[in-house]
Image (cartoon, rainbow, N blue to C red; front, side, top):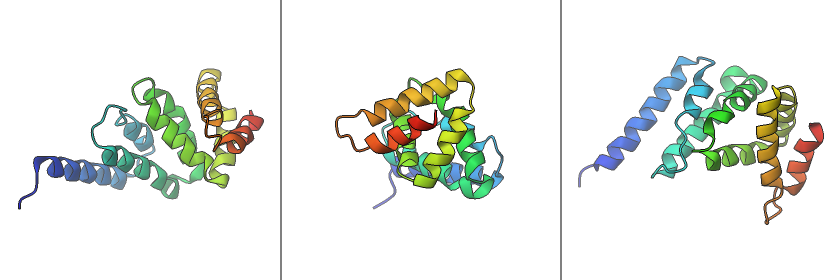
Length: 142
């Protein structure tokens, strides 16, 4: 049984992400953010972008990587808000990242700060209340 066109597409996308990662340029996070789309058929591709962005804290340092992500986050709206939520939930789930991210967001320009703070409020107020405490911790820094 051969490889399907879909499998080739997925593999090519992963190779492209890996090639971009090897460049190690600081603009990489904003470039990767351009790939998110809530209507994408393959979540595994979108999670490939998530994992690539998460790996970049080892390349640039956690504070720089989180700042680049925060500055790039508005490019995910409105077409990839779901992925913006996922990225922010993953940050909220990692206590050291949460604190650094809150400090970064606190110092952003007012529009970006409000966008991210509003998103965190939405996450905090979800019916599951899973992120209530973590969201409140983030908001307290603002």
